[in-house]
Length: 336
Image 1 (cartoon, rainbow, N blue to C red):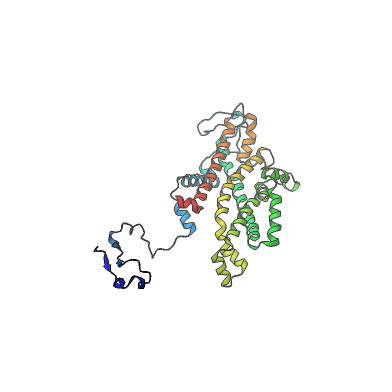
Image 2: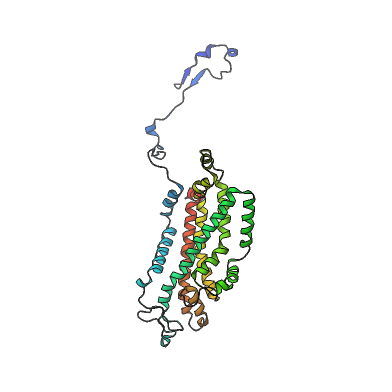
């Protein structure tokens, strides 16, 4: 008789009275000792450890991504340049000498001079502030406006959703640059050109994209179990929207807003290039590119330097948006 089989006490009963018994012996199951299983170290879980939130998991993933590290270093450097330009150059960007017109690079002026005899390097450094200011504050306004409208439309639905969705379609049908050109020609904007007029103009035509994303994210979250539980505990619909729905819908909004920041910097440069953006007395990369277009054949380096600053800044924010998107995407985290 096999060693792992033991007699069944009911085996002696007649076949018809065994009530479906298949074998005359009971099978003993083998269970390996825990000390011999190699999975105990892999499956070990710290029961006392606090579970990580979505943002904590995203941050742990971002810290290991070279794309995030490189883009963050570049963005921090750009912010420092915009906030403290005098640390990077001691040359007055408004001091222009016609004798230095289109002059080559010399000591203390590594990028040479433009057509008016102004130092190209100092103008590129001081122009960072206006260009970055337009991008940052336009992004903030579009996020506030778009998230508010999209969250209300997606959470409450019904006629409010229909009205806000059609309002968004009206603005979404107008291209960003074309709508900004038309709006900047209005007397109230044309006669008061400043970074804030450009910011408001771009925000007016930039919020529908954020609103659509926010609406979709809120619709996906509003029927979650934790929202239903908060409503069952007596929380009002509006408070549930603010405390639970909106915070859990911010991931796609943050990703798109990070990429859009670079888009708005390019939009400001485009508007200034065609003469409807910032006034000429405000230093920005767009204005420097616009003033250098007449020297494109004779001295292309005058146009290349501000365009290079613009390209690196936009690329940094796009890289950051890609890294944040990969970190906040559950499928990307699963495959990492």
